[in-house]
Image (cartoon, rainbow, N blue to C red; front, top):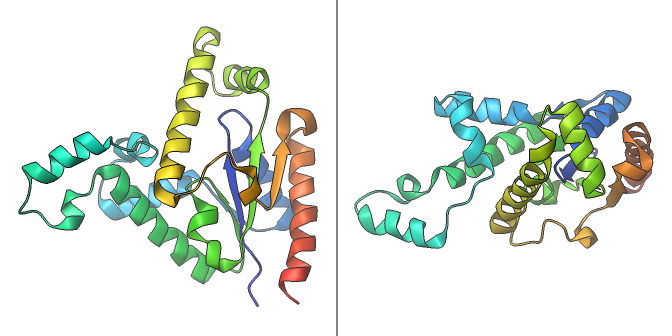
Length: 207
């Protein structure tokens, strides 16, 4: 029987990507994050920079309606905004990986929704805003006076992208198997807790 896949949703600056990679290393499995975006860009024949903003950017219903009314002869797929096309393509790629690999870590991209029927172990990483802004400045080279604005905009994009595509609430902790405060616990301990909880969950999943 397949082991469940670990999916991680994370607030900006919480270290979710780092924690996901640490957990994957401890388990000896692959971790997918921006690799999914790169695969999507290659499959679509587009530069990765053209997809980055679209990946977590959902158009307003008004602009979408204008697009549809202006192009009535186009097919449904052609009418879809780029953000929707990216989500559909990423979903296909994620499911293809799930068919090939026994288990892996997936960071972001509505993983717990896309892989819901695979028995995924879903994790949510969060932290105090002040600590997230400090990480943004230290690790992401964001200017200190812009850190708060960048953080809020990134969280809003992720939340909107998740909520629109899944019909669920991104920050609703009830939907996740495990929620961790990285500012209180630190990246290494978060990764260790994910591995421990995953192994326990996996033993039940395999019964």
